Length: 140
Image 1 (spheres, one colour):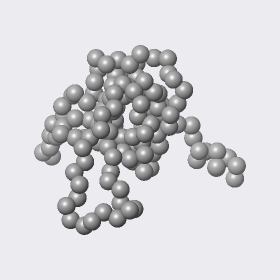
Image 2 (cartoon, one colour; image 1 turned 90 degrees about the vertical axis):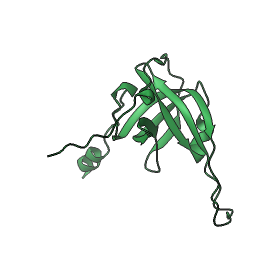
Image 3 (cartoon, one colour; image 1 turned 135 degrees about the horizontal axis):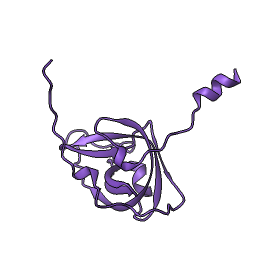
Image 4 (cartoon, one colour; image 1 turned 120 degrees about the vertical axis):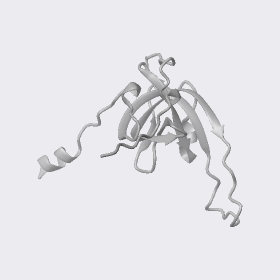
């Protein structure tokens, strides 16, 4: 029985920013935050807001490692951790496409953790969010 439990709990595999591809998920990365800007969220026009329904807070943060950088969309409680210069660990992150470019995000199935400061310089010249992708349908 002990071996089955050990097999299920495997070590996370960390990847680098340059390895991210559109439409993928389950990524674990250690990145530095370069910049964090709040995104205005439109207020819903219909029902009045109850106390349990606080407006969503969204920040677009430029994060990266020594191989490149990408825009990370931080939501709600994640926003408080997004201090420029800080190092964070993203667990089970996914790639969302927004207007043809890649955005990194962590939903309820993932985790964002503040980590010890990393000793790498972020490669800002390789910004994966500036690459525009086009959806191509292939005829079979």
